[in-house]
Image (tube, rainbow, N blue to C red; front, side):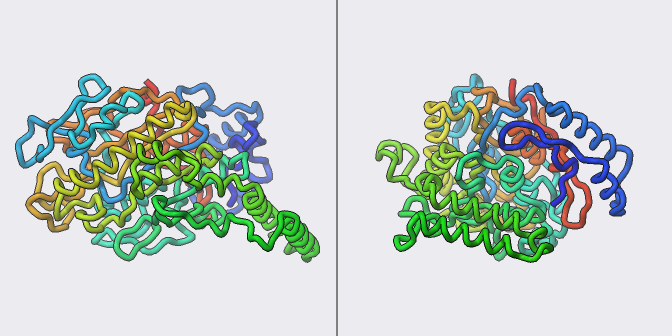
Length: 490
């Protein structure tokens, strides 16, 4: 994929390569792209000037380029913000629900009594209470997840909110963009997704792939339970294959590629060499494989995270980042519309029992352990940690807001106002950003669109969110249609 302004990003050594050449500009101009105008040209010209000086136009901006890696904790299913992060004790009973609020390390801020460990760790994070967007067809899970992870609404949404299966024409998920623009400097996996794909009904993995970037930038998908022994055959050197034999095979493959006809070489040899070289390094070094070995952790630390799929997945996330992985996406281990009595945040049929007895205790222990552990290890200095879902739940109990049926104690989908937790990379700890109204129905101030949150992730990594890329039709698009929330840095 040609990126415009292609080479204006920082490479893995931290230097900037040259911007678009006149030849590239002529090539783009001759391709007949709609929207090629003075604004595009000036944007590319600015990027070229910045590349020539070796300085990003955002360099020196507050919070820019403070992160080396990201852990995205994706709570798929839509957690109830009013019952977890944003209680409203003075609201009517059919809004405030069953839980009381408790004090936190953020002065004057209370969260649900179901989250006592997180209340004690919020001095390390910022609580965003003003996440918000207007649905426009994004009222159901898959479409909202796609928007949150790619920065774009899906092209086709049925009345029910269901989407078509993943397609090579899809916008890339954030981790794919990041692994392309910020490749690791160590022989590790650049982007890992676990422990299951994003899913609603029969639509699996929408918004979770590299899309038009190409499969080379898909995540390494560890779809296993981290609370059980992990099988890593694809990262393990077979007993009958010695390191020297593997090296010989790699050299043989390079030789075969070198003898390809000139045209085939020009089209594919370099990429094949590069990808096989990375695979060779991954297997031979063992660093990626060792990162998955939770037996190297003490029983005390494993117990602190919780002996659950989610808890051990967060511990594994920390180990991967420690090893050099750029982006880890830890999905809540459930389908978006699963059984709330067992595993899903999608609490139409029941809200308070599952939250009290299952979801919140698991989330509370795991997320608080991650923040505490990474803080003690000094990893929050350059790792961004983000916990968010695709939307919240309806403030009023037992009503339908998305066409779904709801039990008397259930809450429906609610994208108009919800919450997120973000930490690391100089983001102010012990702070609340934004506030909801008296019923947690809409932001009272400082609204944050999901695209703005995603733009903030790119910004923290030193990637300009306004960078232009070409999609599968060679049309120029912004990396994300959002602006970074610079106010998170205090």
